[in-house]
Each structure stands twice: as C-alpha cells, then as structure tokens.
Length: 459
Image (cartoon, rainbow, N blue to C red; front, side, top):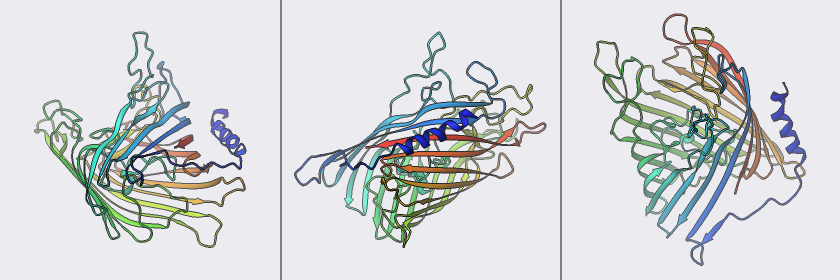
C-alpha cells in the first residue's frame, strides 16, 4: 500500500512547493541573419517516470522469482532537437536522444542485461540514436514542401505524428504508432514526403522504404498467424485534415496535444498507411507460405478550445477510429518501460499471462481500435499554476483474441509553467489474458492496473 501511495504523496509535495515566480523565458534560438529569418532553434526535454505496476499473473523478477507487483523509476524520454532554417526555403531537422531506460533494460524493449558483462550486470548505457534526420525544400512556400530522410510525417491519424512535448495525457496510447519499433525507428521511416496547407486543408504524404524487420519468407514460417516478414517493398502513407477554426502550424510534423486554451482548434481528419508483403503466414502445415499486405486506415476529430465565459478554463477532446489489417490473427503485445517481461510456465501456473510479464498487453493487431480522450483545464491558481484532470477510453477488437475489450486511464496534470514544466499522475487499467485450456485463443483473466508519476520539463 505504501508503494501505491508514493506517487500521490510526491505529487502533493510538488504542488505545495509551487511559488508565484516568473517562469517565462525566450526560446533558445541563434539568429543567422539580422532579421532572424535564418536561425538555429535548440529544444531539449526530459520525461521521468516513477511507477507502481500490478504485474501480470506469473511475472518473474530478474532472479526468476514470482513478482506480483513492482515499483520502478525510468527515463521515458531524453531528447535534443535542432531546427535549422538555413534560408527562407531550406530547413534541416536533427533530433536525437534515448527512450525507456530503466534499471534493468538499458533502453532495449523487453530484454534484460543489454550489454551485460560476464557477471550478469546490465541495464546501463542505452543507445543514443537518431529520431529525425531530414532536409526540406519549400517548392511553393506554405503550400508545397518536399523533404527527404528519416522523418515523422506519418499517415493514418493525427496521433501518429503527435508531439511528445505537449501530450494532454501522460503519454500516447502507443497503438497510434502502428509500426512502433517494428518496421520503423521509434515511429520514423526513411523516405520522401510532401506536405503543405491549401486554405484550410492541411496534408502530408510520404513514400518510404520501411526498415527490414521480421523473418525470411521461407520454411521457418510455420504458423497460420501472420508475422512480420523481411521484404524490400516500399510503403505509402498520408494524412489530411480540415481546420474549421484556428489554423495550426505545420512547419514541423509534430501535432500539438493541447494548446491549454491558447488556440481554438476543431479539426476533422483521415489517413492511411499501406505496405505490400509486410507479413507472412502458413495457413496449414501442407500449404505454401503466403505474404500479406499491411493496411492501416483511420479517421479522427480533435477539439481544443477555451471555454467562453470562464476564467481560463479550456476543453480538450480527441477521438479516433482505426482499422488495422496486418494479415490473419496478427498481434503485438507491448509494455512501456516494462521491467519484467518473463513469466512462469503455463504448465505450472494455469493463470500465467498470455501476453507476457510486467505490464505487457495486446496493443496492436489485425482488427479495429476506437480511442477517445477528454480533459478539462481548470482556472489558474493564485500562484499561476493550474490543474487539468482527464480520462481516456480505448476499445480494441482484435481478430486474434476474438472478443473485444475496453480499458481506461484516469489522470491529472499539474502545470507549473504550461507544458514547459508539468507533473502528471495517471492510473491505467489494462485487460489481462491467460493461456487457454484448449485451443489457441487466449482467455480473458480480469484486469490489472498501473500508477505512474511523470515529471516533464522542456526548454
């Protein structure tokens, strides 16, 4: 119980320490000419997580012992972004950093002891890697820009290109990044893109060559369930929305999560992603291997606006519906900053988690996902800080599981200086599945929870 209360106690302590001081600053920008039309902008940010997780049934700790719960600390993100406007028509973006470093995994998703020594010590020095590296030329300024490189101009939905600096919630729901750490590099692929705004239409389109990921299309594929396969085919993706009220900037690809009342935005959008021969399966042991196209289609609506006749209150609502086809019965179990992916044998524990240990859960797969979030920014306190409670709901219907499931998050933002300095506390509920007594379809085995306290500061 004390571990569960720890994030709440820390949030209370942080709130009581807030002072009525001037937190304003000028963005870190180096002017390259007298007018300032040529410049180098530097952005840096850190997001730290303290979490308490009710682990999936059968979870094992790093010594192989049963672990029903865990309290962890991790670096969710540590990044630096450089935006160089070298002329009115040329721009360079370089973005690098790390994600998901914990005491055990060293930034590698779901593995223990990356870079471990002979003594078994690991979990240190995660890889510093590039997130974005692209150049852009303004063919028709504002209306048509072309760019090349490792980029984040994604299709399907607004959240597929969400900024990590200004989430309304603690984080993204993860399923919004439909290729996350499979054929992309943390939601980026190598390719060519076009973007621009035509009156109130904002659009982005890209042709990419996804990263090689999966298994060779040969006799090694024995399952009727689709899996990622090695291929050299190119992908295409696009997203466009109509902006009814204030227009948003598209200089950079990162969609804002919440403007905190600074803008009145109402957008309706739709998009797609298509990658031929992205997965493969073998329908029966006597059949030949069959390849499958990956197709993701989505539509969404985004509302973020100040509430009239109120003192600084604002409303944020986002809802998306996405259809995913990765091939028959494709599924991916994902857990963010998961410390304990190992589980007991299902032969010795019939309730052992089918998805894996820790906080792993079915996140992406062939099927449909409906996601909705809503938050209310409350009036500022006397010291200039503000609270924003929010709720999310996710409805997943995956072919591999057979039955739909619902899950939710309850959260509270405490804005010390808007998104530049904030603390977020969130409780997340997730469905849990066990191995079936007969057949191959996992069986629902209740739900588990997780409490996360995040400190977020960016310059």
